[in-house]
Length: 359
Ligand SMILES: C[S@@+](CC[C@H](N)C(=O)[O-])C[C@H]1O[C@@H](n2cnc3c(N)ncnc32)[C@H](O)[C@@H]1O
Image (cartoon, rainbow, N blue to C red; front, top):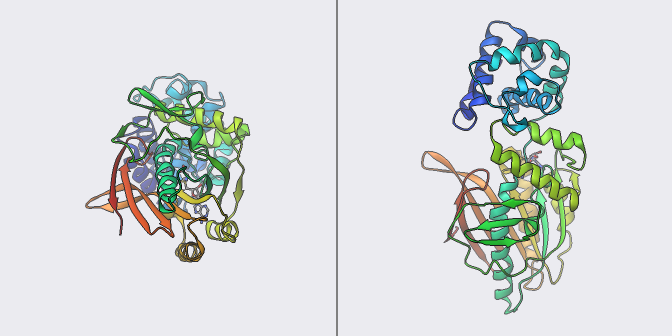
């Protein structure tokens, strides 16, 4: 039942977004009473839990707010300069639901919840430095390998510029100090390599089942609408990363991960380290695609050579005791390296570097 799915989604954001939590609890109540939300969500009654109808609803309303078409509701959204008044939020949402019912229905039924979290560039940056250093050490090479970065499930491709972000770590700026995207990665510890060495990304390519073109206003609004309206830090990160992406475009191809990867990895490339990277994608991949992905990678790994090495770098959640923990894992072929480089929060910030063997 939709009202229950809304309540379930509301519990997921209670700690992080009182605004979205309150909106979803009120909407669940409205759905249970057959109010206007029933019409906004018409057609979604049997949608599976994984499509998160509540977040599609919250995203559609946020989008109208961002477009400047719901001024009274906008007064509650810090993303457009507002301040939440939770006691009045639903009262101010109701006229918007009545006035834009059909459009909200089209928005909620025509989109999938889609995020792209540029905070994950922090673990990626340190992970790439580590991978290139270890691959070079394995062949006694003095300088680190240049990188060919292949991202699966890249969404809007906002993590394809890890070398062009200004990372503010303690009193130092790492990466590109002149970048429009400054990130405080909130690190504990550091990777066991010199992060002041330059990181050379000589080729970048990416795919996604539903790529978002952030060079368009529609793409920017789409990703922005799924950032909860009272998360200013996440909002700022996203907007700066989009600004950077517009200065340094890298297309994201519409494709299924394993098929695309098979094509990309068909031939080993000499004198570069090929890195396959994915973050918070694996849970969405079907069992058949997972099996194919593993097979494609195993085949490419068997063809890797010391001068055409291959790395897998992933930032994905793993169940640890009672909660989920996000781990940065690195495998390197043919060097036979398999490491957990550290753990962090879902958005990649904060992150703790702590290298352990990964079996
Ligand atoms: C939660 S988002 C994460 C996006 C990005 N990796 C990040 O860290 O911000 C998951 C992405 O994986 C994509 N995806 C899911 N299954 C996929 C598959 N089999 N092949 C390619 N992309 C996939 C989705 O379309 C979505 O954009």
